[in-house]
Length: 82
Picture 1 (cartoon, rainbow, N blue to C red):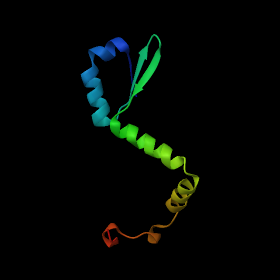
Picture 2: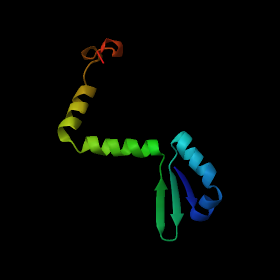
Picture 3: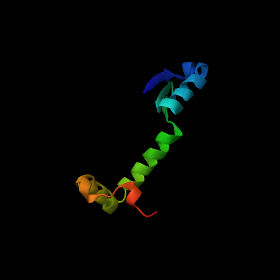
């Protein structure tokens, strides 16, 4: 995570945001009133999706169960009828 204050953030906003977008590097911006964290849209969407999945106990349990399954329980992508 990149840490900066609001003054330096204003000065380097383009470079900081580009790094956040390209490399998924969050930015922690400190101000006199507190801090703010800036995430790439991709990271934000992934976080929201993870929270959504985690909020559904049966789905979460099923994912954990499947994660522990042996590879032979799965089929290859090209074998799936889309």
